[in-house]
Length: 245
Image (tube, rainbow, N blue to C red):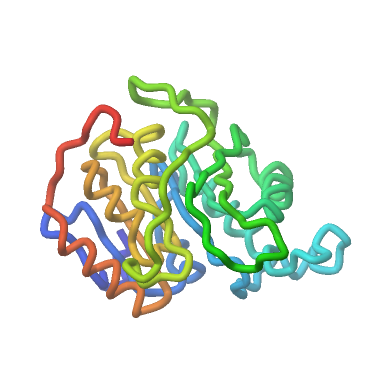
């Protein structure tokens, strides 16, 4: 919990807490090694000026990737917050994955375990003269080398229909089912998870459905309102199935 700030929204059982604010300012208030998993879809292109950026910005490694430089400090913070044998899932694009792996290996002791491909199944029309993007990538890393949980062995290809942006009212919303699979693979009921970039709240909805505890942070008040509305529409507790997807 962030004792210095009032939650924007909290479920009646206090398992799910949403804060409106900047992750850069709020993450330092969270206790070390308190989260079993961190699951997030970072907003690329944001400005997070950091000590790491100031030190390394002129180096060739950042050519063309200045919008990702803030990820260095962010990954270090994630390492501090993860429990021993905790898991980190970072959603990204094909042109950013190599840079993220390099940051993680050079700046943290986290173990890069796999690159998961989320197959959206359905793609939009878009530019007819370029390949239609039909997948996103999820970088999976751990503190230590824990095994996956559950009784079913998933592959690293997740074919899950994307959600309608008009329904979620968020331009890059990810399906609740994607976050559910992360949680089933790496957490158990009652475990505490974190999403520093909540967006429209899919990760918190997944945590609520699977009886996990969660803390979410979102800088945009409009998206905080959307996330709160989605949570209010759900039963306070839903039984976990053995294999939700």
